[in-house]
Amino acid sequence: MNISFLLISAVILFYAGYRFYSAYLAKVWGEDNARTTPAVALKDDVDYAPAKKGIVFSHYFASIAGAGPIIGPTVALIYGYAPVWLWVVLGGIFIGAVHDYSALFISLQEKGKSIAQISSSAMGRIGYVLFITFTFTMIVLVTGAFLGLTATALTSVVSLIDLNIEGGSSILYTVVKDGKEVAQIGGIASTSVIIITLFAPLIGYLIYRRNMNLYYGSLLSIILLAFSVIAGIYFPVSIEPNLWMVIISVYCFIAAGAPVWLLLQPRDFINSFLLYFGIFFLIIGAIAGGLAGSQINAPAFNMAEGSAKLGMLWPFLFITIACGAISGFHSLIGSGTVSKQVSCESDARPIAYGGMIIESLLAVTVIIAVGGGMSYSNYIDTVFPTAQGARSNPILAFSLGMGGLLNKGLGIPMAYGAIFGILMLEGFVITTLDTAVRLSRLLLEEFWSTIFEKPPAFLRSYYFNAGVSVAAMLYLAYTSKFLSIWPIFGAANQLLAALGLIAVTAWLIKNNKPALFTFFPALFMVATTLIALYSLLTEKYIPTKNITLMATDIILIILSIGVILLSIKKLMRPSIASSLKSEKEPS
Image (cartoon, rainbow, N blue to C red; front, top):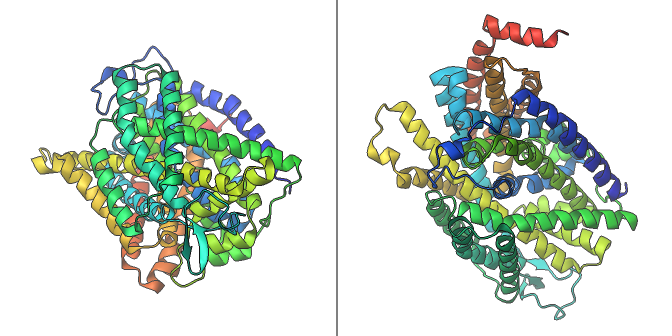
């Protein structure tokens, strides 16, 4: 199939979804700019810090679109591009964007409370404890998966043959590995990440403390990005993967307690331009490549091989794409940090629903890049390697696919496109990590205040809670490989989305608002994820005796069933049941 067809048809559907469906949702929520948002009412310039819509959108989009919408579709392409495209497009419009918008808007109504805190009013204190424990476990999984993946990608080397470069004809720094000359493109990303992180406080100071014009701030950020890439090409940083994991963990520990304007917001703001440019070039490359006749190299349907590598299409396709269609992690971002930065209610729709739609569009371009920009055999060798000791590297697969797509469509040398691809991802993986660790710290602080009437001082300490979060992340990354962690993370992430939709449904009913648009997606996601967790436990973790993931899987199942039973009990109350029934009946 011509690659441009997949893009154009997706864009049309996404536009229709935002134009019409999100407008309907805005009416359901009853957005009103006369109401004061938590960021304004509770401003403290640490966690509650009102910001301009563009700044908040950059933070939200950078946090949710870090790696998930790229890695998930890249791995799931093994099932064929058709089912992956359908799930990303339809799931994004009717489930994912609804979930994101709902979580943010409820948090705005509830003084910036997290989705876990909001669940307590819907499911009671026990439900809240179960929900927050489940959420913390899920965050440990996402940080553990991304930490190991980041360390692998930052040390990536690529054969000059795969980059269509002849030996000695490139400015890239090369080394000889296994008798082949390879380019250290991971080292370029390493240098860029380091420079951006070091300069982020300066950007934050200029924009948030000196009120620099946003356009000048944007220009300065783009110049900084360009400088970091040039520096990376000439001075690539080479660090062992395990040491990288330690360094990133230390950074996350520091960032988890720093004011949001100092690291979190400026890093997201700077990196967002990489993602914007990346999406732009992917779209232009897909259109130009389509006009030139480029086709998708991956098969349309590949159920047998996909099932052999990952598991049956249902439920595993729907958890492998843990972002891009729907992601529970987004509700943590929306209710955990974004709701504390939104200045007016009307900003919620473009930030949350619009942000998710653009993330889904990114996922579509990933399908096109990986499916059309590299050979299918090269894709298999990179993402599902069979060589002894080889690590799955979907970040590298996407980078090579992007390089191939831009080369075919725009004539850009493949090496430069691949470098752009890995840079595009790396900054956002680390952004996702520091945001997730901060959320984990906040969740633990909430948890202790719920368990104890007056928590001991050390349990209220940032050092203790951030330390626990970082230690759990580092341990999981050290003990499990990416392809082992990703499926259980995906299941936990999607189940968190289902639980979030259940909490939203209960809140809507409590406030006498229509709720079927969240109720049915919640049922679908609950069934999908619980089946996936059971299959992973019985077919993978128990047979391979992976104690860490086996225990995690069992804990997730127990916690989720507890939350679901409490929710059913709440939803089956006569007043609520009659509300759902009346909504189904025509007026």
